[in-house]
Each structure stands twice: as C-alpha cells, then as structure tokens.
Amino acid sequence: MAERIEQEEIFSQVLRAGRRTYFFDVRATKADDYYLTVTESKKFTHDDGTFHYQKHKIYLYKEDFADFHEMLQKATDYIVTEKGDEVISERHQKDFKKEENSGEIKSAQSFTDVSFDDI
Image (cartoon, rainbow, N blue to C red):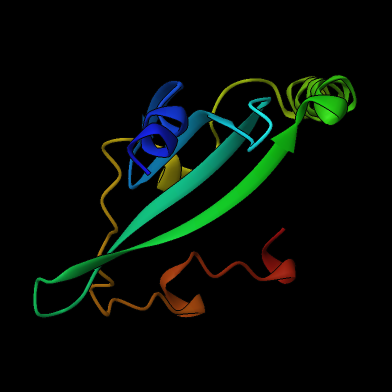
C-alpha cells in the first residue's frame, strides 16, 4: 500500500485563485502509466464561522491530451478575442468586497423633470 501512495504523488502543481484552488496532479494507473487529475476546490464559510470545501475533479488520460489541449486553446482564444483579457466581473477581483445595500432607493422624481413643452 505504501508503494501505491508514492505513485499518487508523482507531480503536483497548485493554482490559488481567490476562494478557489486548482490542483493539477499527475498520478499513475495500475499499469504504471500516467494520467492527470484537475481538481477545483472552493471554500465555503458558514454563518457560524465553520467552513467546508466543495471539490470537483476531472480525470484526463494521455489519449485525450491533444484534443483537450486543442479545445481548451480554442475556447480560451475565443474568450480573449471576444472579451479581451481584462477581468470584467468584480467578483473575481482579489480585493472584491460585496457592497451592502443601504436601502436607498432612487425614485424617478429625483431626476430632473423635463417637459416637452419647455423645449
């Protein structure tokens, strides 16, 4: 069993992105061939201060590497071409803080009232 644990720790990289962390892990099959697991781990904090992690994992095998790489490249190129590489969503900025709604409601009456007869 100890030998199997060593095989699972072949190569690993971690990408921290706000509340999300991505793990790229190279693992070995029983036949000692390699494959990749990509795990997204997202931290959720409860009202009482406790937290849990929600994880999603994909397994990628060598026979799919070329097609996966091609599709990932096409998708990311499309996004950058269509929307640029600037992050638009405030929620994805590292210093994002959700603004509290102050309860202030602006009515239509607070804007300048213009009559067509005045023009």
